[in-house]
Length: 124
Length: 313
Image (cartoon, rainbow over all chains, first blue to last red; front, side, top):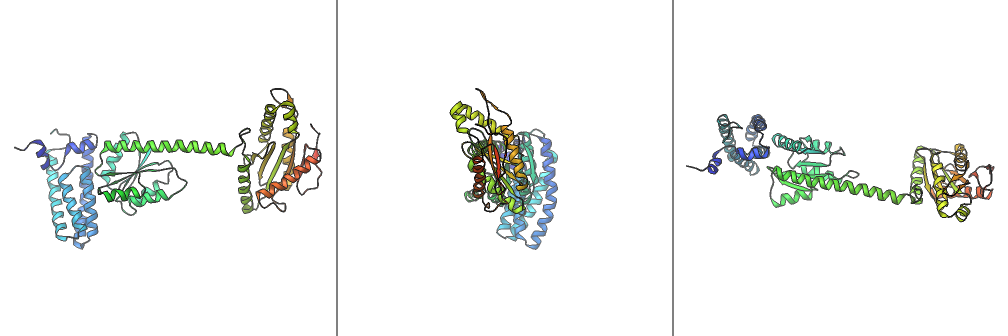
């Protein structure tokens, strides 16, 4: 049975960390997560185009941007994937970028499912 | 106090904005380097949080531009970045940032760092006030508080240049308290000082806001008159002279009769191209006024027919 610290590693969001950052305001966290998902739609579209064109500069920029936004919301797993995406762009690795884009989409869906069952404000 | 948040990432910007508002600051938002630079034209924006990576002009370039500008009060800059390598931090600080924080930001730390920035801004403001006070003290005569000789000479040079550009004459009236030495000898220096203060006070009431008055020497007062030509200066000189001599000056001891002599010159006259030359011409006229019995006004280059009311001790 994993302890609570280990359990946190598997969660897509570290609620304690992000709520500490925004003064414990759960409704504000909901607002920020909505912004994140809305922006992701546009970033995903841009990322697909950048990968298709092999525009590694834009892949890197999108990875960097997603890394920052994910870190701000303590979306640990998404942050890790975004770092991979940024690296893929910087090192011009097409296959790595494609894999990272797929992982990104998967992690977004995981986060959405997690948040449906564990909305901000629910005690853990 | 207003703080600029220059951050292209909306989430980061919203979190910063909310925290800053909770700490009592007013947030001004920009989403690009160009937007940040535009916002920083506001002189009241003294604290700024700049993201390094922004579309167009990045935070580093904004820092450099801020540090290059002159005539602006100090802007305290905290540079934010996900770049956490030593060389990045050095590059950020070398661009002119005062502080550097890595993302994601720890907000307790940011609050403390903003307080540091505010402390530095407050300190700079206090220093500027003191600097201005010292500059003012150094520019004024210690007794009368009117401009001192070097300052008034500077004003005259500037006014002559402006007059040349705008094709307008500049007038100078040099006044000397008649027999001031006798006043000092008879009543003492304290009463002499009181008399001089009253003379200055009376003269100041008769000049325009755009005119400048200074103490040129011991009992010599100089007045610079922008846009004043030979056609007006005699009348102005007389008005100034009369304002002093029309009644005795009340001092702690007695009412002291005081008159002044005045020498006037304007930049329309020959050999008046510089401040020194113009003053020299006015001084020549003043000497003539003294020679012609005092309590009168002589305009250089005019027929010496001084207006004189009475001779005084």
